[in-house]
Amino acid sequence: MLKEKLIMLPGPTNVPSRVLRAMSKPIINHRGQEFHELYNNIQEKLKKVYETENIVFVLSASGTGGVEFATFNFLNHNDKVIVPILGEFSERLAEAVDKTGAETIKIRVDHGKGVTVEQIKSVIETTPNVTAIALVFNETSTGVSIWDFEKIGLLAHEKNILYIVDSISALGGVKLPTDRAYIDVHITGSQKCIATPPGLSFVSVSKKAFEKSKQIKEKRTYYFDLEAYLKFHERSETPYTPAVPLFYALDEALTMILEEGLDNYQKRHEILSTAMYSALEALNIPIMPENEFRSKTVIATKKWNNVDTKQLRKIMENKYGVVVAGEIGSIKDVGLRIGIMGTVNVNHVIQTITALELSLKDMKIIDRVGAGIEAALKIINNYY
Image (cartoon, rainbow, N blue to C red; front, side, top):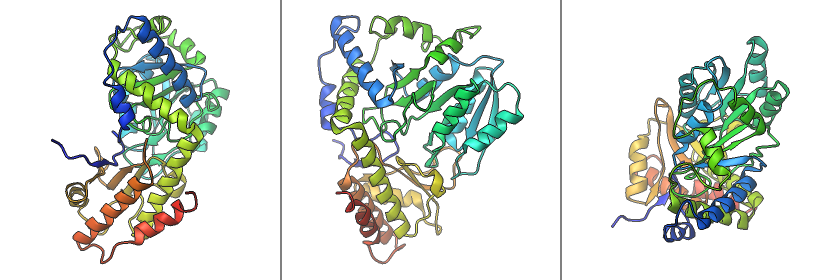
């Protein structure tokens, strides 16, 4: 038997027992009335979490499948697409745009930095015929968020530019009002702030995006074809066999979010991420993002003082039962990445900080423990 550990990764995250139990329901006919009711319930709940009136398509695929759906269905060979590059997942989004045949206009920034609406506006003004902006709102590899996302959406709306947003590691945990921010194609995944097991992704599609999809000259994807998903959506079905147990899990997870209240759910993420940042600062561990770009769901540090962060993570997991992440892809200057996602609570945060401090003491990096916990509790006690 595997020993249960506290998962504090930037995805997948801890899954509530209610959600796991929902997966044990009997398999049903995915072309029958029971599934139609399940599909419609999920649709209405997703719209509330997305804060949208748009259709939200549910794909039996990881977030990368959502990215393919969001690019190949809406981008043409002659499109010019602005893609800010903040880290590993921004690079992957740019690769997906490249594969559509569109011209990718990359805005590269140093690790720890985001982009602003002024930078996007400058590129639009100096580049003729920009047709789309595709950005990763929450860069999971560096813990950077683009907090100008609403201003960028308004700019895209005013310029009649398609606005594609990947919020795979943020939606649910952060207020991302799809319609108010004029997001035309909005992607997220099940295994992050939605607190559902991996295997589903979701994409909301605006009326403007549907119109843009009609301009696609040739279909370049089969499994993720928008026309097929729309046709079957009208029947309250998916075009291909869905992962029915994950649909049950998703339905229960969304119910839990709405029971807590979306604003409360998001506020909890904000409080606990602030507490984690305070703990790291008290331990003199450098934070990767600059203050104005800090994520509320993924905490990323820089490497520091020649600390072997791989060994540190190993001690945290094997001795203290807390799992956090390290660097990913080409992002070699990241030390730790900690997820503040989904059902995360005060106990989870305190347990993580305790494991971190004890592991640092075991490695003789610090002499005493308690500074991080004390700093975190100062934040937490203001709210609880």
